[in-house]
Length: 397
Image (cartoon, rainbow, N blue to C red):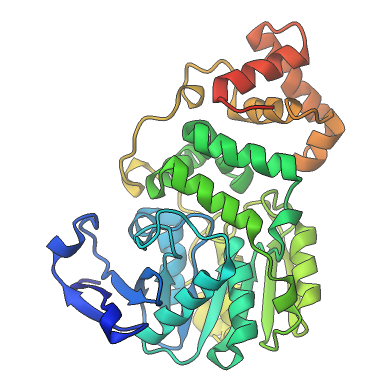
């Protein structure tokens, strides 16, 4: 799609836009997308669309960037498959991507809810299906509870309702700090957590993609917001037909949290899918798409013609150029990203059994990672190896 960009005109009220030239938005790079802006009353919210038909609003995950996401092959293939049947409206939540009113993602749900409403108004969309994933699920649930007349159906992927239930307070703080202090290492750690079934090349490409969408500070703020969201009160008020999809081995958001979300929403159905990849466009994307589109009324016959093959392998051409990673994320690091992740959990005082439960590994595998790291580092004890990991990444115990 091509065309001019839009930006908000606060004088004309929420959800209204006016056309501008490229000089008014010099930070927006050249793209085949048309990037539009909606004014929510407090935020300049970027959105784009593709396809035609009944509208589907696709919110942002932890990090979102309309143009960078479109350059990432697995995501683009996934969205294009939906756009064969639906008008797909994507948006960057406040504080992310091209939505530039704020420097960081707000931890309160209210600005996010108003951003969805502003985009729907600007896109002349009285009613839509909301397709949300991960942290976007809390926003979608809150919106559906508050504006039921505007939500045709609700689809939640890798869902949770309460961010504090994702991990312990100490682990949440440690991971936010790791993202802030060592974006190179943490993007690789996140890739391993979000995309465990990937090849090494795919994980590297996804780590590069993550870093292309946000600075370390913005990513850390976004992750802090992920942990702050709480839509438990709103969930019981939702009356919209809801489909909750969750992969059995999801390590980023445990299946138990998705099941709890489905149980809290009165008219929700939970479907557990095979696999461990967190994002629906990774792994068996075709099965995810089949469930989503069938729930939204697309026939099986129509689906069979457009469903993508499993997970296209990204290459350097699929992501924008990025800065060099931090030292611990380079080939100079003597230990692997997985071993570093385990050692950082050791530094928090966790036992092998606790780490195994946190990472969905066997105790034997955790013990092996620690032993291998100690050998590579020539560390006399696990504590010494953990101290090296802390010093390497700049985190604190």
